[in-house]
Amino acid sequence: MYYLRLIPSKEKKPLKIVLLGEGGVGKTTISKSYIDNYFFTKSKQTIAVEFHSKIISRSENEVSKLQLWDLGGQEHFKHMGVFGDFCKGADAALLCFDLTDLSSLFNLAEWIEFIPPLIPRFLIGTKSDLATHDERDFNLDRYVQRYNCIKSFKCSAKDLPTVMNIFEYVLLSIERKNNKVGNISSDSNTHLSNKLLVS
Ligand SMILES: Nc1nc2c(ncn2[C@@H]2O[C@H](COP(=O)(O)OP(=O)(O)OP(=O)(O)O)[C@@H](O)[C@H]2O)c(=O)[nH]1
Ligand SMILES: [Mg+2]
Image 1 (tube, rainbow, N blue to C red):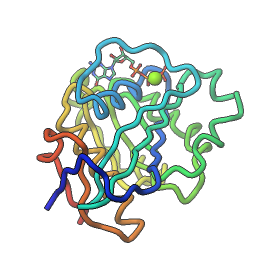
Image 2 (cartoon, helix red, strand yellow; image 1 turned 135 degrees about the vertical axis):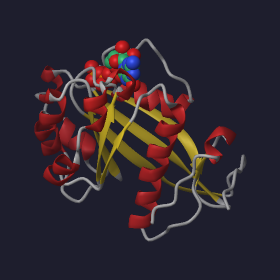
Image 3 (cartoon, rainbow, N blue to C red; image 1 turned 180 degrees about the vertical axis):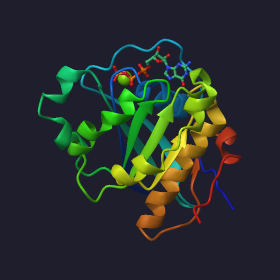
C-alpha cells in the first residue's frame, strides 16, 4: 500500500543523492525530469553544483525531503577540490554516462574517486532515445562490477515513467539499506503507478 499525505505528521532527515559524470551527459536533465515530471529541452551547463529537491512520502506518517546534488561535469570543476566534500553523507550516488558516447562511461573512473566507499552507487546510461540499437544493447555488467555499483539502468530523460522507476528503485534501495523497507512514494499521483519493490 502506498500513501500520499499532504500534511506530514512526522518529518525525517533529508535524503541526499549525488549525480556525477562528464559534462553534457544529461545529469541536470534527468534530475529535472524526475523532480518536475517534465522533459526540459534547454539545459545550461551546471556551474559547480545544482540542487533539486522534492518532498517524498516514506510511509503513512513519514515524509522527508529528497535532495539531488547535481555536480557540474566540466573538467575544471573536478579540480576545485570540493566534489569529495559534496559527496560526503550521500545516501546514494548516480554515476551517469551518455550511451551514445562511451568515453563518458570510461571516464567515470575519475568520478568514482569523489565517492566515499560505503555509499551505494548506481550506473545510469542516458539518452537512450538517441542511441543506436548496439549502444542500447551494450552490456554494462563489467562496468557495474568495475565501478562497484549495485545495478545499472538505461534511460532517456524523455521517458518519464522509466526515470521515475529508476529513482523509486534507488530510494527503495536506500530504505532497504537502512533496514526500513516499507512504503515509499513521490508526492505526485503520476508517480504512484511507478512503484518498484526491491526484491
Ligand atoms: N535527446 C535527449 N537529449 C538529452 C537527454 N538528456 C539530456 N539531453 C540533452 O543533453 C544536453 C546536456 O544535458 P545536461 O542535462 O545539461 O547535461 P549535464 O550532465 O547536466 O551537463 P553539465 O551540467 O555540463 O555537467 C541538453 O541539451 C539536454 O537537453 C536525453 O535523454 N535525450
Ligand atoms: Mg548539469
